[in-house]
Amino acid sequence: MENLNKLKIAIGSDHAGFNLKEELKEYLIALGYDLTDFGVDNAEHPVDYPDIGFAIAKKVANGEFDRGILVCGTGLGMAIVANKVSGIRAAFCPDCILASFSRSHNDANILTLGGRVITPLNAKEIVRVWLEVPFSGERHLERLKKIEVIEKEIRGE
Image 1 (cartoon, rainbow, N blue to C red):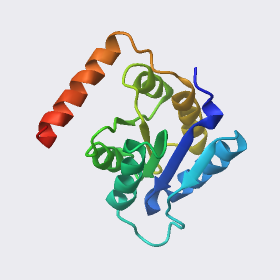
Image 2: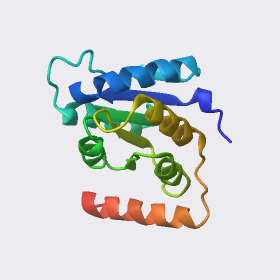
Image 3: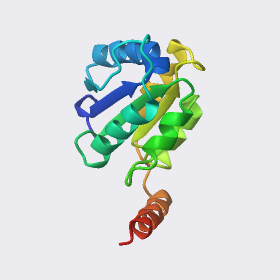
Image 4: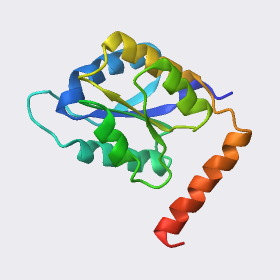
């Protein structure tokens, strides 16, 4: 099993997810994770979630980071934009059950959360589960390979 504290994690938010991102950032740093914050720096100035979501998704897809955590108002917009990037399996997980399945079955490499719809306490537990649950492989690996084939077809390869 991989050493979880050696995971390189990119985190970012728009203005609506800023406060939750800041709480998660403190939590992850306290746990010893290698964390890089890609913004935003405050909740007062509106920032379009696709700008942050796309930047982090590209960095996870190219292997610069092992995982990404994206926070917007609902978590839905960030999931939509991140999943536009080939190689990304972003999962919106409003609870620990979905966080666990997103890792064990789907090998999700980006977690999205909603700053307006989830409490910091619940978000911390969701993040903990999402970071700790390993991909189970087995029959799920074949399904992920099918997704890769679809991505190549879309790219015209």
